[in-house]
Amino acid sequence: MHSWWDDQNPDRPTYEPLTDDLACDVVVVGAGLVGVTTALALARAGTSVVVVEARTVAAGTTGGTTGKVSLLQGTRLSTIQQHHAESLRGYVGANRAGQDWIRAYCQTSGLSYDERDAVTYATTAAGERRLRQEQEACVEADLPVVWDGEPGLPYEVRGAIRLVGQGQVDAVALTARVAADAVDAGARIFEGTRVLGVERGPRRRVRTAHATIEAQDVVLATGTPILDRGGFFARLSPKRSYAAAFRTEGPAVDAMHLSIDAPTRSLRTSTPDGSVLLVGGNGHTTGRARSEAAKLDELVAWARETFGVGTPLATWSAQDYSPTGGLPYVGRLLPVDPHVHVATGFDKWGMAMGAAAGLALAGDLLGEAPGWRDSVRAWRRPALRDATTAAVVNAEVGAELGKGWVSAALSRDEDPPSVRGLPPCADSGDGTRLSAVCTHLGGVVEWNDAERTWDCPLHGSRFADDGSVIEGPATRPLRRR
Ligand SMILES: Cc1cc2nc3c(=O)[nH]c(=O)nc-3n(C[C@H](O)[C@H](O)[C@H](O)COP(=O)(O)OP(=O)(O)OC[C@H]3O[C@@H](n4cnc5c(N)ncnc54)[C@H](O)[C@@H]3O)c2cc1C
Ligand code: FES
Image (cartoon, rainbow, N blue to C red; front, side, top):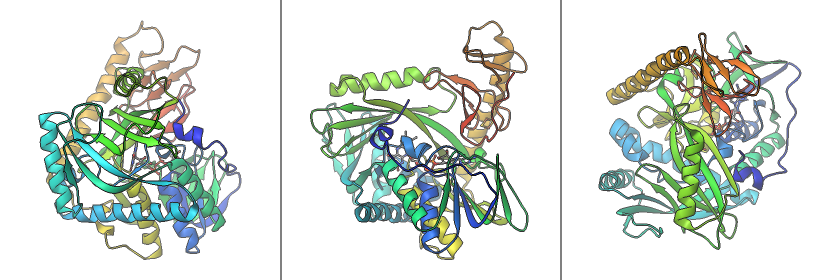
């Protein structure tokens, strides 16, 4: 699958893989929006920065985003209000700073930043109650949302809240340009170079397959952190979701819409005249859908029926990580180590917040913390409700671990693609037989029939059908059998 954004940006700059040892002040691992924003801010301040990207710039979640740069974020503000009321305004302040940065950057770089209203709508009575709670959280955070009984959709809704003056971008174009500007400011970028580990010492040693980089500080801008120190994987839930682009006669919607009720429906337009409709939704925990292909088919069928559109121009999926308690984690990987930093837990709201995270991490390293900095720290006193949510997430992970091993042991005679036997073997049916045991922490992978990948239901590592790592906390491939 390839995203609509890939089609829009065929000629973006490419960078060579890393082949020789290097030394620098800061290594940024990962060239999504967070990584390149961090690198640009540091390079412009005169810091020597190396960016190491396993695939290509914006190949991760940033390449599959719907690109809404919005302070109205579904039910996120009421979730934060429930768990961390004291951080609500700070979280909105961080997002506002990120949004301002993206808007200004797009304007000065000649990239399009389309001003749009953001709309969150409800179709059920329960959804309407949640919408009212969200409205209250917005008021508390000084966001001037208005109740909107008719949000301009071709189906019935019970109500909506609208925030004017938000924005939508092509995140791949944005990220590629930020990366290129970082290089112009002195940063070096290496693509096709997966970081395998970071060794501690007087300076950090960042290990890749062919070379090592020595640095004072390391920023893990890898979606979910690749190192297990800090145990962030246990505080995050990996969520996969789907998107499709359709040609329309004119703009099919006049705003960026998001449903509050399940299944999620996310809508926006693209291209200068708005004649492409992007539809997203049908999310689930990675590795736990009965059929990923069915999830995508159902989303496409809904769009065709609802908007009368034809065959999709592109379909794709991507994943992001939901934190317990709603706030992202931006800061130290471990409280006792001031030199390894992370940014994760954006919960599908990592555009404005992703840029803010990059600014915050660069600010930490340069000694310039913005006022909202504390609200999104990686380590904070957990609220009691966070601990409860984390316990539920980890109970589910434990159950999935047991389920994977037991069902592999029981299903010996299934046709490929399947996982069977002990130790579990993954057989995609093309002659490649792999260990089905995830190289992160021993989960048993599941076949993803939409993307022909092996996905781990525990913490979201994903592997290609040849066993190579695609994304998630794992850094080593599935072993050949
Ligand atoms: C379907 C979907 C729609 C979304 N829509 C929106 C939206 O409309 N608005 C919004 O605000 N947010 C949205 N989000 C969320 C947003 O896109 C993400 O939060 C954001 O892009 C995350 O950026 P990132 O830089 O942290 O991660 P990524 O873009 O995933 O970047 C991480 C990079 O690290 C690299 N990497 C990983 N491991 C290694 C390693 N070992 N060595 C080297 N490199 C490595 C990866 O290849 C990747 O390029 C959406 C998310 C999804 C899934
Ligand atoms: S991702 Fe953690 S065990 Fe697979």
